[in-house]
Image 1 (cartoon, rainbow, N blue to C red):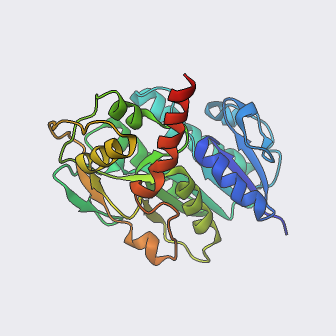
Image 2 (image 1 turned 90 degrees about the vertical axis):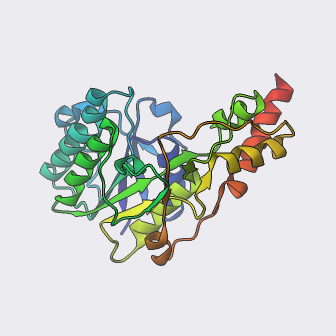
Length: 281
């Protein structure tokens, strides 16, 4: 039987995930603000997630839902509207329509952790975020935790990938600084790979931390990047408030293997993309 999958908030991660699902023979529907940006093979469902309750009947009896939406503004009202209210209303609407909903996934963030002195964090670490974003995401995770379906929360660290050249540009322009703050990241293709992997697991845990194999200080990343680009190394700078190390042991123990286990494997293609743009411009 063909699995019917909904990707709600189908941006970069959702498009990458859809490619894997379509190769598996799944039928995939996507919701996003600009449906013309959906990857080939995805069937658009042109609704506003923030008005899901009034969206009528779903176009299919979905077996799996991936909620990968993002807020359009960085304030608490916008975050709560999309991560909490829209998530709750969408699931309620799908249940009322009789969708099987064999498994529901929510992409959360490592912003739920408040640790700031270089501590290691994992799925069992305390979650005491200092910002509204982390607090709202914990409220969204609670919706998945208490759902009648099998729910899985995936806390992703900093996502990078094609088109995301901001850090490369800062190094090129001499605006980056080398600090001792720990940073964590995951390539967009590995984000999609994690979600696909967990969908196929027979009995997934309710929570996973999605971050690559190597937390690194800002100094390590930007100094390496400056050498790759061929510009002077960034000067020392003051450490920021974000300073923790994410441990992915639980995800690795589930059998997942990263395509880009560290920034050294993931950034070369992004650097090449940036340099090509510079040569054209």
